[in-house]
Length: 122
Image (cartoon, rainbow, N blue to C red):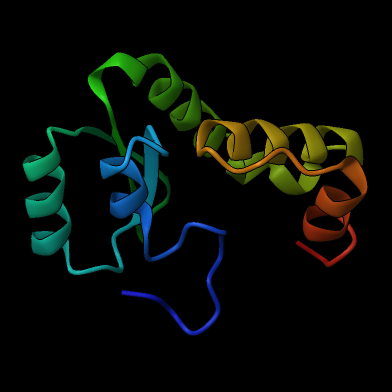
């Protein structure tokens, strides 16, 4: 399921990339059909943990068993989100860069991340 405006470069194809070995950690929110998501995760042998930093949204982190530490670090990053607006610009950039690395996004330069997280009102 692809939303009208994807949030990340892998949105809608996470499990396809996972199955091909191109992605080791997947982050999904609870706004997807969870039966389908859990069925696909089980088929691929993915494990999961949850992170709730907003009482209205639960994030699901699916991961290869060999990448559990990355999944746990992603959870820590997500749990920092209530403090995000208080981060310095440099801290926001590092937060976004580390999150992107864990999710398998190509590392982009600081100015691109700055535009995404800092200069766009995020």
